[in-house]
Image (cartoon, rainbow, N blue to C red; front, top):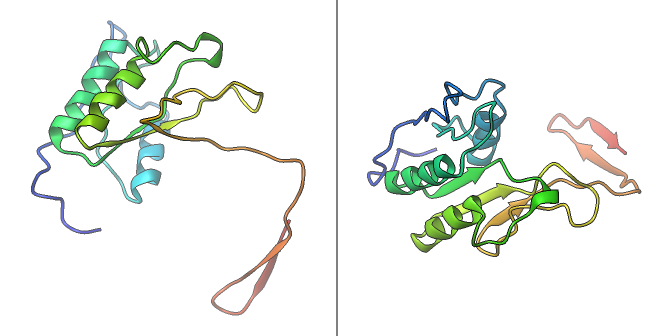
Length: 154
């Protein structure tokens, strides 16, 4: 990775949420997800605690990231697919729209309720939604390592 761009004005943010104390990433999932997306360790804002994610805090974290000059925001949270709202009342969709309007790509998880139909969340057209899937068949292939060893994968 190259030098940090000169337009970057940011620092890491930790925001306290609704009296639940620190919004630290106590299990490492959000930090891990962000570093996977970036390909390196990143500073990240944390807008949630074990008590949940306040809409105002999510919006503030997105605004802070945009103001700091980020190029990509990775959001690994979402509402339950059973309680999906329209884009006008979904804080992630609203914050992502404002980020998109300022040239910042927003990448969100598709949720944790699948693989049933209609369970994907964070599906606003201005969000790049990512998810895992499974299928009922296998693909057989071989991987050839640099030392010439061949691994067969099912």
